[in-house]
Image (cartoon, rainbow, N blue to C red):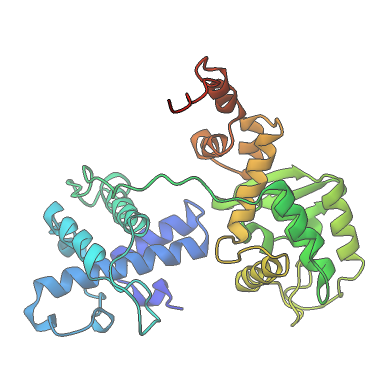
Length: 335
């Protein structure tokens, strides 16, 4: 993995360091910012320098990018880059058979990174007077409702867990389905984060929240802890361990969830660990939990992020449809 501390010019290092130390963004988030901006600067250098036209972007160094360079970028340059992302950007970098053109969500994230960079230069560092992206519109996103498991499918998934790592996998799935954890939150759990009926979660932006564990979660954790191997070393306090006696990784959890979905007879291509988070939110709302309480459980900063789940299975809308006086009118028979 590239390290921005040695592979980025000073103006970019300062921005990324600000996000890592002052804004307390995770290393993963900061690394994604770096990769997004590195690609943007490579593209800008290529379209400006004819000598770079035949080079791949990966061959272009950005170490000479400075304030003069970033200050010369105009809104029209940003739109040119967005067109490149939409048409010519390789969708899957490590695949020899990848399609081209990023989807709207991916483009929106990259534009958000560029906007954040220029906001920093103008409003925080006060190095630029004009912000070329202040009025830019993000790509329009399709509003899709989150996919989730039904209550019966959730029960099927849990009841199908068997074999190797049964106790660990069952506990992980139970926490996903009951607490709506993000995968980063789950893999980061330590033994001391579990205290009786509560669990300490380190969420996005290093924000801590405390969740109460219901009977199912407590039982699943107790059963797992009874068989968890004691280990030494840097991961000695990790709650969930891999087969190599290390803190379980995101990729291992993703693979485990897919495997358990298949064993339960569910379509593993349609669901993931994040879909289990959606499931937890949906089931809570369907069973009368207040949306603000669900917001706290999920660790959402904004209520409107949580409210999308209220549209998935809104009983009030179903009642309203049935209340229409025309709802029981029968189709007349053909004469």
